[in-house]
Length: 88
Image (cartoon, rainbow, N blue to C red):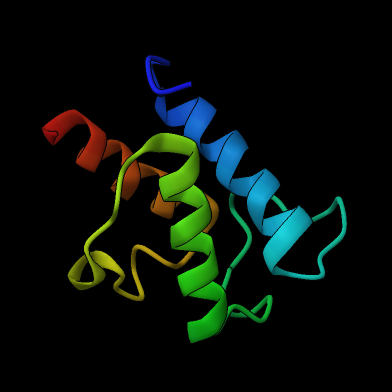
């Protein structure tokens, strides 16, 4: 999967899947726009999420980028990861 070209949309879908399936106990109403912190994401979950994203995309997001703004939603996090991918 390393050769896959990740788009912002495919990243959103993958990160949403990781969050829904592995990180948070959320239902299908949880979307890319939903607030991750309000949904219960805390520091251990962030670490798990970042590891899962790295496994999926090969990109490690620097902790300095894990700001409240970037962790606001799956969409903002995906945009952050996408920037990392574009820059690498």
